[in-house]
Image (cartoon, rainbow, N blue to C red; front, side, top):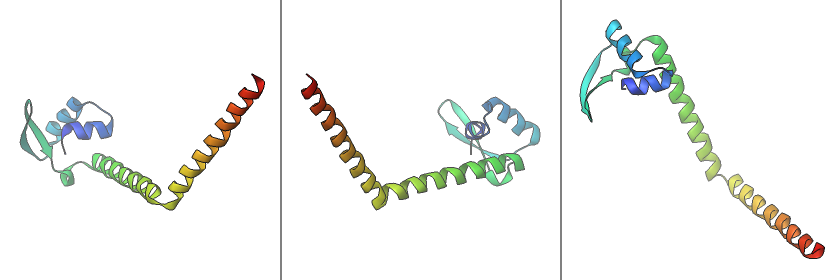
Length: 103
């Protein structure tokens, strides 16, 4: 996990993460990227507060995506779509009929 990813999850600057990593001696592997090198930090060796935030963010993201995927693939989603389409046809059909009678 890079400093940029950790900073985005924590809601602080990338530079703040880099300074903290140097100060606390986080373990990393250097990897080449566009613009030079990036430090790829080992997630299991991160401090407890950051590890907790990273874990919580991943769990929330996974549960949110799986819940949405399950809903879209369920028969309820198809029923909802049909309901919205029927409502739109009835509503706008009535509006058109009303405008023809009034005009």
